[in-house]
Each structure stands twice: as C-alpha cells, then as structure tokens.
Image (cartoon, rainbow over all chains, first blue to last red; front, top):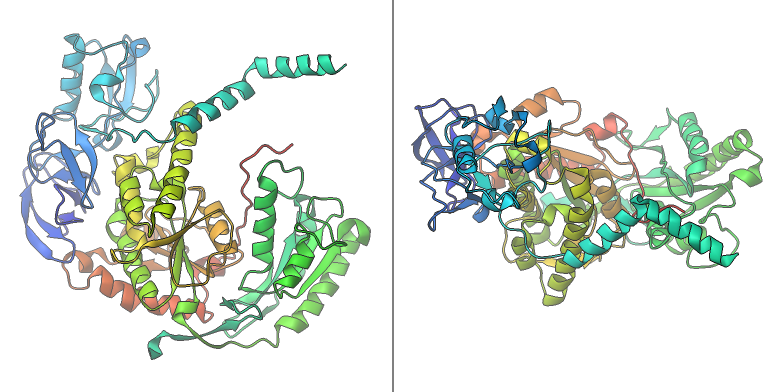
Length: 206
Length: 411
C-alpha cells in the first residue's frame, strides 16, 4: 500500500500517493528512509493532495506549511493532523456577494453556494470564511486582507473559485518598477488614447 | 571511467554532437512551404546505425520586421540552430529580402558567413533568386544531395559522458514531478557534473516563489544579482500582464492536481537541478547565447513555455534534453532528442507513445531502489544509449518542434 510520502525530513506535510479514506490509518514513507510510521486521516483525501502531519495554527509558530524543507504556504484556519491542505482563492468580491455562484472547489469538489448563508463545505473552511463575512469582520474595501493574497484576482460571477485552508506566502517585493512600466504600456496599447495620440502626432507633422 | 565512454560525432569546431542531421533552416517565415517540401522529398532517407539521422526542416514565424532586441534574439537562434552540434550540414533558405537574407557581405548579422566561421558546411537557397517555389524546391533538393555527400562519411568516435550537455526542463507538472521525477533527474545531474560534465536549465517564471533557494545556489554575488534582477523582471511582467488574463501560476490544472502555491510548484521544479550543495550555478546566461564549455551547472533566462525555453538552451549548445512531466507532453525538438521522464503511473500508461522513462514510485518509497539508484541504473544507461543513436519516443513520433522567441511587437 502506498499511503503517504514525505519529501524532506523537515516537512510538516505529506503527499497522499492514492485516494485515502476518512478515519483509516495509512503508512507514512520518507525520502531515502522507507516507511517511518503511520497517520490516521480525518477526512477523505484525493490522490496527490497534501495532508498535515501535525496540528497547524495561524495564531502561532506552526502557521507555516513546510514541504521540500521550505515554507510553501501558511494556514488560514486551525488545522488538525491528518487534514487535507489546499489553497483558497475564495476572496470575497463585493459585486458577487449577493449572487449565487457555482464554485468548483479544486480538489474538494463542487457546490452551489448562496453567499448570504453560512454554508458548510468540506469540513471547516467555507463555514469559517462565511461566518466571519456575515459577522462583518471582513474589510470589504479590500476583501483580500482577511483571506490573504490569493490567486491574484477577485472572483466574479461564474469564475472558478478554489476553497481551501491555505494562503500563498506574501510575495517578495520584486519587480514593482517593471510591473508599473508594463502595466502603463499595456494600458496604453489597449486604450483609445493610444490611437488618439498617434493621430495628434501625425497632425503635428503635417 | 570506462562506463562513461560513448560513441558520438566530433565536430570541426570541437563540439560533440549525438546526431548527424542535415538541417534545412529558413531565415524567414515565408519560406516554410519550400523547406517542408524539400524535407518531404527526403522523408525516407535516413542514415546512422539506428536510422537516427535525417533531413530535418524547421519552420518558425520570425525573420522579418523585428523590433528591439528581437532582431538579435532571432539571429542568435538561427545561428545557434545552424551551428548546432547535432547538425552535420545546413541548408539556409531565404527569400532574398528578409532581415537575415544577406549573403553578400561579412557583417555581424550575415548568417552564412557567421556559420562558415563556426566551421559549418552550409549552402544557401534564395527563393526569389531561384524563381519561385517550384524552382526553389528543385534547387533545394540538389543542394541537399550535395550536403548528403558531406554528412554521410562522418563516423561516430569515442567521446565521454561529460561531452554531452543536457537541457533540463519540466512541463505539465503535477505533484509527482516535484516528489519523484524531478529529484531523480536531479541525482543524474549531480552525477554528470561530478564526472566533469555540464547541464543547463531555464524557465525563469518557474523560479518565482523559490527565489531564496535559487539565489543561494548561485556561485557568486554577481550571478546572484543578475538572477535577482531577472526574477524581478519576470514577476513584474507576470503581475502586470497576467492579472489581466485572470489566470496565473499555479495554473488551474496544477491546482486541480493538488499543487497549492507557486512556491510549492517552484520548489518542486528546483529538485531537477540537483541536490549536491557544493554544485553551484556557474553563470546566468542570456536567452539563446552560447553555453560556456567548462564544466558546471548553468541557468539560461527563458520563458516557462516548454518549446521556447528548450529552443533557447539547445541553440546555446545543449545536445540532448531531459524533460520531466507529470501529466504528460508530446514535445520533441528538431535539433535534439528529448527524453521524457514521469513518475505518474497513469500518465505513463495513457501517454505511452510519448513517455520514455517511468520512475517506479513503489520502489522509491519503500527504499528498495532510491531515486539516486534509479538515476544511475536507468536514466544514465538510457542517456548514453540515446546519445549513441537510440531514438527517443519524440523522435519515433517525428515530433520536430522549433520556435523563435519574440518579446517585442512585430512592426
């Protein structure tokens, strides 16, 4: 049986090498060491998903998810050992707040969600997110502040949203200058202004 | 060491090639039809012990109306392709009025004279001068027959494993890539460099998120600074442009397969360049420029897109490619064989026509055969066999991809 695999001895997550069943115990393997123990998973885990090996908590120093010996993400909610870990792009969009949206949950499944209700999806993630949203603890002017930097955009009606219990790590402040130059150039190319400016230039030459 | 010896082609310019192709290289996109038809005429003509050598035509969308640095990039790509170690002789097909069609002067951007200076046996066919498509094809066939007399007497001679430089890349990543296939290739890269060889990797966009790892892997502060600037440029450009496309890294396919963040994906990718902390990135190279001849690990700036980054590394002098994949890819290249490595059992069954090596996960996790064992007992012999002429899946399928990178607008 394949069970779970740890890519580095310092990791606090392992990868499921096959579909795992809730409540069952599976062997845990580590690179170059073979079988090192076992783990009971607390929910169904799809093949190749990540599973926490210990408790993780956003409030303390167990916030970081370590894979390959390096931090790859941080948890957004308390996570018990044996839990599925995956990214969330569930950033609230004010414009989408009163809509029904169909949400493919990445590897978690698909559901239709009424954003006005507290909806339990999977085990925890959505419930917590929805609850804090309804309690008004979200900063709606910047919806991403609560759920962290996500996939880089706010979902709109009908767009893919992944729900999970991880945030991406804050991006390094590199390339901001390049970004502004390219954004400016790109916007210029797109805008009518670009054509207008060309016309004006042509006019002056005449 | 005797098990490092292999039979390959020694070229006049001291490079070592593992194929002896005749390359038909158009300088401009409008000659694509002519080169394809000449190639088709020689479809059945193969030579070499495994029938691994043939008349290979490439096509691309460049060669005219370039602006900015694209002119230089397109030129160095064509120059690197024509003088590639795996190319025994080269037929340049130009229209007559394109940016690289000059034949009459010795300038920086005269492709023919630059190729001759690199010791390449080269012929030129101008479509306008020949009098149109049909006459050009007829003349081209005659010229290729001439080149055939040049390449067919060439014989393989004794070379060393260290003479063969692989281009390392990955595409269609899933969680098995970072866990198994990339580390296995990484162990082979460690071994190759340890034996005095070189390896090159690219895909700047796939470094984002694992900057710390790659910066630490650089041999000097200068190289670190260069790499840092390159990553900055890429992440800035990515943020500026991809935000609009509403899709970034990791891709929706990556996320569906279980990869959560760009850091996770990039760290998984980083396993393919080796694990030995003593091996450092010797130099950060610009796209499509020549890879230094002394031993070591090199990084070439390039796009995440498989074909263009592979083209960049090959025209830089890499002679073979090791390609790790999770979900599978049919990619092949006109200039060099591509060895596909996967650790995803389903992929290797589903795409058996495209996958060369399956890393057996069950043996690896139970520690019966570590990934290092696998690299030395499976990847290395295959690497040597392919270098000696055994055809890879992509060669058998006749997948001969080629492309020229463009960053600037075509004007």
